View 1: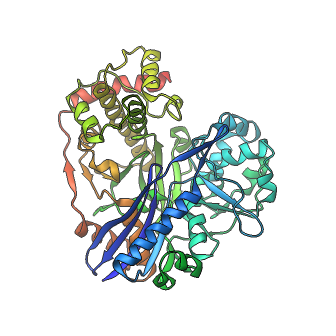
View 2: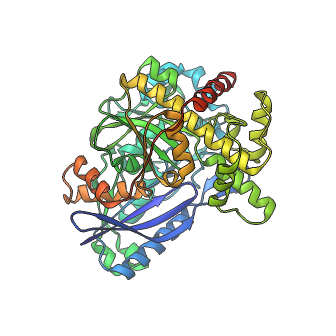
View 3: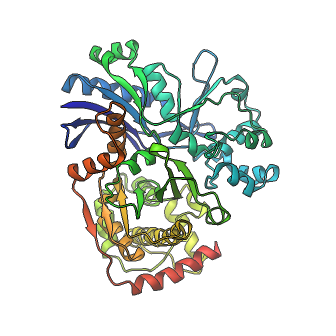
Length: 493
């Protein structure tokens, strides 16, 4: 039985997951979990990458000491954020957090220099101010000396792969999240960067998911476990959503997926990027997938709203209420008392999320929800209705009907949201696996080592290995009425 490690870094926490594959089934075990906390320095928000690196090494040490030889390891993280290296390969500065406010106003500035439609035509990426393109533009506008000193740009998983193996590589799926990449040319959109006044001398050619980067460095093995010098470092589909989509246990092609967590990524797998006027109007994105595919999807601000409400209430109470208790309150709250657009800009980085929700309701002529259960229910119902809205747009772009929705990731455990999604979208919802990102990461490692031969074989392994739950849609009429209200709020905002 072979053993492999997935290092899965999310916006709230990181994990080192051990995968064991017996030729038929994949079993997962969490070896090490640690928080991923943003750090504010002066006016800016950063990722504490040195603390993450220390925790990664702690996880490697635990895994090797508990289970012996590890065949391979790979890292996946969120997208868009990056690190800059100098000529010696050393880190320049502290990588910024995508929620840092330095990108405020950068999209408008970019459109003054290159039309919005032209940027989309060259990159195929959804417009969000947190994209790498606008982060780099903010640095260029601030005359950041880091840009002049930089010799290499690495996305966050690339940085950790570099520190693990010593190999510098920029993996395809994460590179495509930047809005700096031309998916049709399979190269950087240098004309876009030049038009916006952004240098690009530090950009590397991209490498495909499944690239074998070499063995764990001796220095890392000395700090963790000597046996790791025999462990291969493999770049999986290193954008976490790309790994999660690779783990969707679909048996047919006519499915949509929702990778549900802090963000909700909803879309379909396509063989060519969909870069059309309609895709631009819908603000869809084309991000890289496995095997030359693309993920035609929309980023939706998902359970972030619940997480931030919980954080705010925890500051008031002195302790965090368990998510299960919050969702139980929501299940007992009245239906459709208020609806919000989860992607309203006021929800991107508010200091007080419950207050921001109340203000949205007042702005749209609604009575704000009065208690915690009502607030959480309003968020979950609004998310389900946003999924319906996105599904309608997705089917328009695909030119066909979606028969089933697969929900993967941590949000697949939320029975209330999964049922609301089935009800709102009037489609069956199949929930699971929960650890989709780590599963997809491990499956790609197995593919790289020739243990698995095809995508279909990988999806079959997922179906054999994990319990799945199906939610059937119920009475559609209340949801249709709520959707009519919801669309009006979208129009207003």
